[in-house]
Image (cartoon, rainbow, N blue to C red; front, side, top):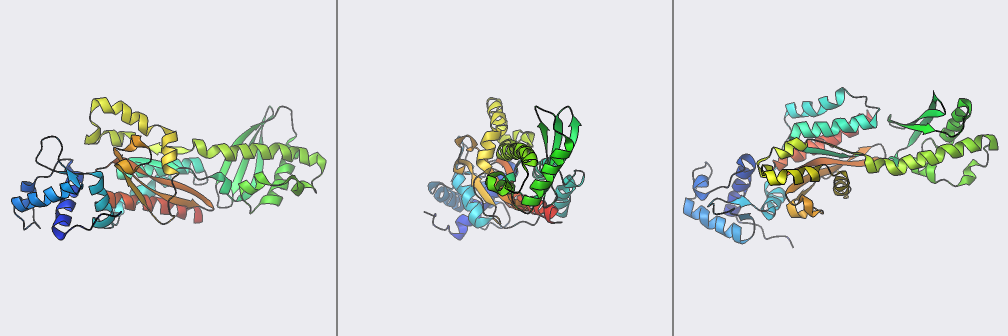
Length: 344
C-alpha cells in the first residue's frame, strides 16, 4: 500500500535531507537546515519534523549522530513524489554522443561497448548494457568468406545495418560456391523475417531446394541457431566498476572485495537487467527493492532500448546516494541515441 502523502513541512525537510546526503554523503542536522535559505523553521521545529519522518521510516540516524540520512523508503518517496525532471546539460549530451563516433556503427559488439562507456563516463557510475536478443533481428542478407583450411566467416546482415559475424569450421572441405549458393537460398527465403523464424522453420519450406544444395543449407542453419541461442547469454557489457568503488559508501576495506565480485558477476547483472521495463519508462529500484539481495546497497536505473525489432536494456548501478534526476535523464538519453543510430 502506498504511504500517505507527507505534509508540506515534511516534504521540505525530507527533500533537503535527501539532497544534502546525495551531495555530501553526510547526515543532515536540524541546526544545519535551520540556517539554509528557504527554511523559516527553527531548529526545534525541524527536529520535530525529523522525528515524525523517522517514525514513519523515511529517515534514520546512523550511529550516535544527531544528523539524519534517508532510508530506502525515503529515497523511494523522493524519486516518486519529490524530484523533478532534469534536462541533461549540453556538455553531457555531447559526451554521450561522442562515445559512438569513433566506432563502427555496423558492429553491434563495438556499439554496445561504446554505450556502456558513454554511460559510465557521463554518470560516474557503473554502466551496464544487456545486448538485444538476436532472435528478433530481421534478416537482410547472408554472405560468406573463405578463410582457408575448411574455415569460413559467415556474415549475417540485419535489416537496419548491423552485421553479426561468426566463424564456421567444417570437418570436410566444402567448395565456396556451394556455401555461397546456400546463403543465397536462405536469403531469398527468409529476408524480411526474423532469425528465430529462420531457425525454427519446418523442413517443408525447403521442398523446392535440390538435394545437392539442401545438404549445405542444413549445415548452416544449425550453426546460426546455436549462435542465436547462446549469443545474448554472454553479451553483458559493463564499464566503470572503479566509479562505484570510489564512492564513500564503499571505502571500507572489508567490503571492497565483495563489491568488486558483485559488480563483475555478469550472470547477476544479466538477471537484474532482464526484468521487464516498459519501452518509454525508466525503472528505478532502490536498495532492498532489487530482486537479488546482494544489491541491497545499490540503486539501479534502467530502461529498454530498441534496435529495429530487437530489444535490449541498459542503465547504471551505483550507491543509493545518487543524483536520480540527472541519471534518469542520462539513461533515457543513451537509449534514445541507440535508437537513432539504428533508424538513421
